Length: 397
Ligand code: HEM
Image 1 (tube, rainbow, N blue to C red):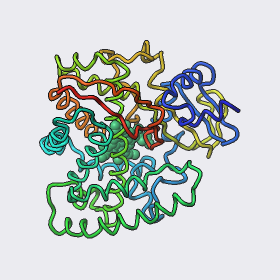
Image 2 (image 1 turned 120 degrees about the horizontal axis):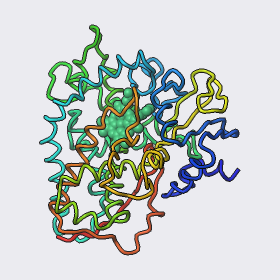
Image 3 (image 1 turned 90 degrees about the vertical axis):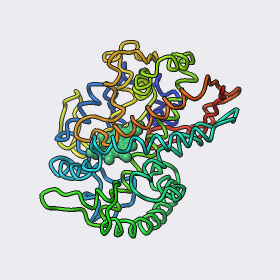
Image 4 (image 1 turned 45 degrees about the vertical axis):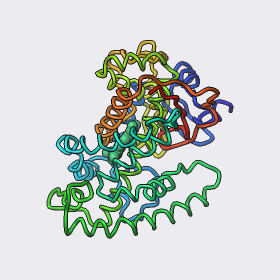
């Protein structure tokens, strides 16, 4: 029973990795009978669950956000399987081309520069509050084409909408989500109508124009898609940025000077953090009876693929428990998923992280841990698995 209790990442704490290892070694295909959920921990298994949509479906019972039924499958790219998925994804992808990324680069750099300028002369900065939270929400507000002055509102709504459901007060969460959703939709709707009339250079306008087989998204679908993008992109990127700083401070403190002497190492750092510190998991539903992993799984049962455990599988990453930015092939991690649902925003998240870290490293001579910081007191559960609410960093100007 203890093992079952620990299935909740939160109980395993900030370092669920010892438990992941135990499961990989002794119980890699584990059925939690109480909750009727399968759990897989090995790299190959996790990858197969993510790839094989015929065996493992993304048609989950509920979405994290209260989307009206009639819009559910058409607006949420993540809750449908191929072939419907392909069409939905192609529509969204039109707003995420390599060309758009190139065009977004200077806009993102401006936002990064502004946030770093705010740290001038400050001896200790809370990197979560001053960079990891504001950067993704400002970027996505800007790219979507909503006024950046409204980003606090947007952040507030999206935080509530994407609260995990596995907390005690289910009814209360549901009610708060309903209220936030209504306010958010009322806010976005007139903006979308305006963009349809007068398109600009932003994602909302692209979504109103995106076309496949002569079919366009309705205004409601554009609104829901935008909310989906905010949810998928905000907290995850915030977690990545916080974890990068955590790793630079605690996993490999000498890495900062190495980066300062060679900025081309920044992307390697980002990939290693994604591999090493991203304790996310994805759920699917068994779509047909199968014993691909040995035990008999029954159609309709839930299955959780533990990405954070797969990313430390020794068979793929020798010395997996060691943080090493020079590790060859670390970008084979599964932090962005794999297969048909591979993260649509991965290039954007990577770009934000690389630009933020490169600019930070260029600007500050050194940085240090804050004395007495107890990470255990600052963990919060999130759609990214776990996230930090605060991370103080001592700056050397
Ligand atoms: C899907 C992780 C940032 C948009 C996914 C999936 C993962 C993931 C694991 C796969 C879900 C599944 O298999 O069911 C991350 C991480 C991020 C990040 C770790 C940051 C470090 C973003 C950003 C955006 C975004 C910035 C957009 C603004 C999406 C979308 C999907 C997705 C739309 C659904 C794709 C589909 O179902 O076809 N992400 N994501 N993500 N992500 Fe991200």
